[in-house]
Length: 294
Image (spheres, one colour):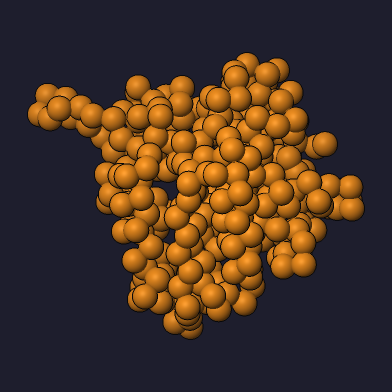
């Protein structure tokens, strides 16, 4: 494994500001490829003028098939979360040629780091949600299903020096996620994630098989017409949640291309193929779900 962790002091501290600014934090991990980075979007409180209160925080993992990070699934989503009154973090996790479990480690590191700064950032440490789109959904769902599993045990104990519950998300948001490595897989994502260890590990990262009663409550959405990551990925995960008696909310929209992001003009592409008015209601549905369940 080539993602060697250098510890908490591996961070380069950034300057945290209000919602109009972002601070990049380099993760203390050595990579074959580019360093993983997360960007914070923290609303500033003014205790001299207002009552300070704790906000939920959403950690956002953009998609891109473990090859790149979609810019339409990062900051735009974070700013929408700020609009809802939440704080946010965009995690640009490691990509190929880095391999599993690098991105999983980075997700665990990030949620632990956020919890350690909860008081400073006015975050409710019991309302931290991890969100992911496409391959970022695989990162988010990997943490949600593996935080108490052998893949993370040594890292949590000997690097983070915390218990598994400290890296457990309180909720999971998945938008058209890569989940299964079976017949309905987005095969390229798994090939990039696993590299030379594909045959050895491919079954173990099929996340519909990793759901347990300890998996956090989940909000999922997908489009029926997604031609890249089949809707079966969300359906398989939802079925596993049902079997494990984990509450979830699932929305399948009939129309819409893969990679819609918000589904608004804000996250549309030049060809106009990523604007889908019937889909962008997902953000309001998610907000209601958070209010009732997290």
